[in-house]
Structure formats: C-alpha cells, structure tokens
Image 1 (cartoon, rainbow, N blue to C red):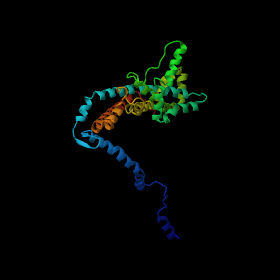
Image 2: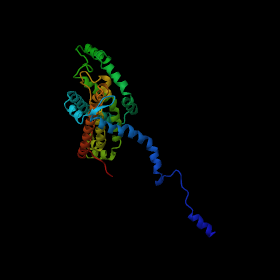
Image 3: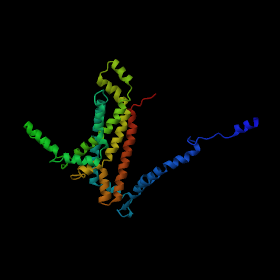
Image 4: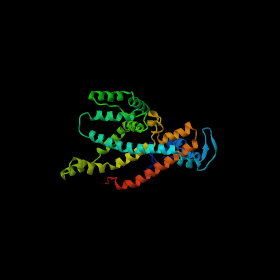
Length: 315
C-alpha cells in the first residue's frame, strides 16, 4: 500500500485541455495569423510602398524613374493643393466643434428622465448606420435649387409676404462647403451623442449632489462638475472627429464632386484625383504622406496639451 501511494503521488496531474498554459502561446498567434497577414499585406506593406512611390515618377502602369523630392517640392508650389488644404481646414474648424456641441446638447437632453427617451435615442442614432452614399444623394436632392426644401422656403416667404429663397448650397463656390458640413453633422452627431450619453451616466451622482448642497445652480453644476468629469470623453471625441475631418471624402465626392471650381474638394479627394484621374501615383503618395505627417503632429500636440484640461478620475 505505501508503494502504491507513492506511485500515485509522483504521477503527473491531469491537465485541463481548456485551461490556458504559457506553452500554448503559439496557438494564440495561430488564431490571429489571418488578421496579421491581412494587416501586413494591405496596410503595413502598402504604407511602406507608398513612401517609396512618393520618390518616383509613377504612372498607373508602373514607375518611369526616380525623382527624389520633386513630388514634394511640386506639392508645395501647387495652388490647387493649398486650395483643398484650406477647404479641409474649414471642415475641421466647423464640423468638429459643432458636432461636439450638438452631440453633448442632445446627450444632456436624453439623459433626463423624460418619456420616450429610447425612441429619441434611436431616431438620433439612425443616421450613423445609414449608408453615407444614400444619405448624400438624398441631401443633394433636398438642397437642390428646385428641390423640396427650396420650394418650402419659397412657400413660407409667400405666406409671410416677404421674399424668401434658399441659398444655392450646391452650385455656389461660397456655400458648397456648407452643404458638406450639414450632411456630416447629420451623419455623425448621433455617434457623438451616444458616447457622451455613456459618459454622462458615469458621472458620480454624489458629486452633483454635493455641489447642489453647496448652493450651485444647474449651470454651475454642469460647468464645474459634469464638464470636467467627461473631459476625457471630449478629448477622445475631439481627436477622433478631427482625424475624420482630415480624411473627409465620401460626403463632398457624392454631393458636389468637390466643385464648383474645387470649392468643396478636400485633401483626400485631391489624392484620389491625382492617383486615378491624372494617374500621378507619385504625387498622390506625396500628398498622402504630407497628410499623415500633419495628422500625426496634430495628434501628438493635442496629447501634450490635453494635460492642461483633461481630468482623469483616480481611485
């Protein structure tokens, strides 16, 4: 009997096949291998190849020769590039703050104990899951000079006895960017609202109650308690939406084709035009890398600046 007990005590324990062990890491890498290969082929290698192409005179069929920094020097002297860069800057300084403000306002309203909150949340979020091409086509029909919105404004003017007409939001060089801003706000504000709503529901109620006991009114509680507590969410949305404004493409491409006279064309559409309309892959790659460096620098700067205004709750 003692011999049997000793043999049993020295036998290795049975392993649970479903329990993770350090020697099973190769299995995890095996599972992520398809995604890793896709990333390497379609992202990492493609990005590296675009850097090389930016130093070449590359047509649609292949390279014609090495040109060094000629594509970048031409880019800096290109008036069209600076025009589309100003258009992109306009989109950033209008879309980002308006989207943050509208999303926060709607989230604050839907965070109240009102009837039908779930239905309103669904209504505001529906544009987010709508196809952008379909939404852009509908907006193009609505904002046309002979569209239903123009007829409604004209009819309202006749009813009031004053001349009213809808500005040309698609065919005017002054107003064409406004139509793109309206479409983008309609499409993406619901996402901002949902993220802000989750952040508002995470604000500790005891802090708001303490401020109320100290005599703070509703606006003071919102400004001094709620806004600092959701500042990390604001920073996240600010970075995300700024990058999205830098990369704006589908909205102006479908609605205005970047026109008239390139008045609504963003930088990304100019990359598309150089690559697939003018077959200048080298210049298109140079623009893409210029845009990448600018976005990277802007994001890095904001990560440094956020220490001054973003509040992170600590345990």
